[in-house]
Image 1 (cartoon, rainbow, N blue to C red):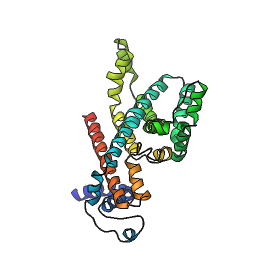
Image 2: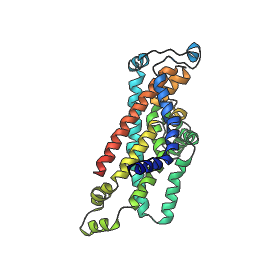
Image 3: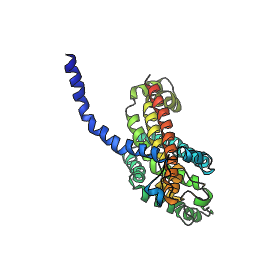
Image 4: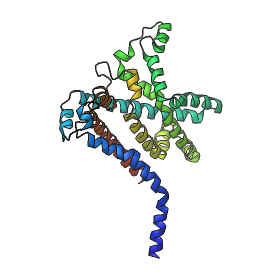
Length: 293
């Protein structure tokens, strides 16, 4: 009997084997190569491109003595917190809440308008955001028509521009997650609270949010990890400038690896980005486990 049970368990694992192999090939292998390359002097061209040598922690010593690195870490955290944790999360929840109360035609129009930015290819959305925030772009033309003077947003406020652009593009995902979560909230509980005299904000804080907290934690984890890897949007809009004022870790890694040809140093920066994503992921997983207790 014990042998049969073991065989059954092994047979149940068979459908998972192809997925595990794909993850090992396309996810684990590049990550391991990145960590390995970060300990070498691999380059994009020249002698080190053909025969990179092992340099140990030299790239990391250089990294933590580079003034651009702590600035990039700080800008990355600001970008993630402002555009993902706060912007996409709260705006997505707000839109989802309004759509549950709106009439079907209004809900359909709003949903289509929000999702349109999400389904655009990232490069198209990036050029659209650039055209909107540029000095002679749509925003300044609208302000000019209203009698106001616009600024050179991408030069004077580059992080504000890229944060708003990322919120515009990514809010749809949070909206869809929260709309599905709100649809599963039992109406009888909210109606009972209403009968007891609970105000709207009280029902939201003490009933709705606790009931969808697992969805909140899951959404926060997904949008955070996605935002950590945003590169195209920032590169098209500002290229990390001016004077590294919008250089996040993905942009800094790209510049070092492909602009200056230092693959080893660039992968060291990418490795730090992976560790940062792992820290966020562990925090959210612990939050999810805490929600299930």
